[in-house]
Length: 427
Image (cartoon, rainbow, N blue to C red; front, side, top):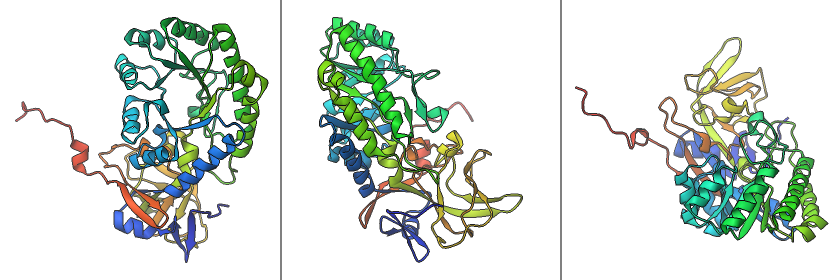
């Protein structure tokens, strides 16, 4: 069973989020509507930071911009002292716009073009090289002062095969032998400072996994330091910290993760051979996923072998269920006290049979005009949304205690056609 917990509240059968009536938000801003609680983000950040820094003081969080690139979200992380993990030049530009300094931005692209490498080089940020073939191309453009290499440590984990980024059959990272050759090439070219990085998976709830993966990376780092005669300013163990999406999943024991990793970084290998490097992490989902709900209105109900609840959000608004068969819990914000009945499918208005937001769910009585809330959509919610079926993208609102403000306007038809040019040779 799903238990309503803070920042969600049941007040007389109506859903409140961060002390604000969701019906009031839907009436004021329309639906579909992403609603983010800034206090939840702050709490997640502080909990994560404390879990690690209490065991190893040279610790830094780099927020993964790809999870949620809203400018207000980025501004909040900058105010908390976070760095930024960017996957493309556009994310670098957004981070810079919201006050992140070059020294606090790590660029991890993959299969980069010359233009992308040149842009990152000019920004004087830390470039994290994904494959050995990229490094020579980068060095032909210029020699950065600081380079990191992304390692595939040979293991990977995740809640779905598409969320596994390490081990066999993944397109990311380089082998230890390729890394040794690349560090030597960079050192010979005049690079002065070095880091090492891995990202093995996403949405992992098993605390022991992070200990296993970090031990593997530390072993690789020691071999590289001894072979290449370099020092590592930081070791970035990536992100992958999961949250519970589906009942009865339990929360990741982040305190145990922090303790386990701290012991590794305080161990002999790290303190003596690696000379106490900085410990970086780059979470996205853990920090923002449960900060946000998606409000959507019920417009049509169709009965049959299974009942379909048709809403104004769809796979264009929230792609994860169609892409990963991902689970997002759904509440009837209008009738929280209604008891679960026969299972229903909750679907959007897109012309695809995969446009199902929730399958075989028991959510109680649902009527046309009701307001549903889809939970845990702060990571890869809006950032994966699209204009498919010529649908404008949703609006976003941020709540701070009882205050709230629009942080992204709902798109219009003008946004969809912006930049298009109509040819003149048709009559």
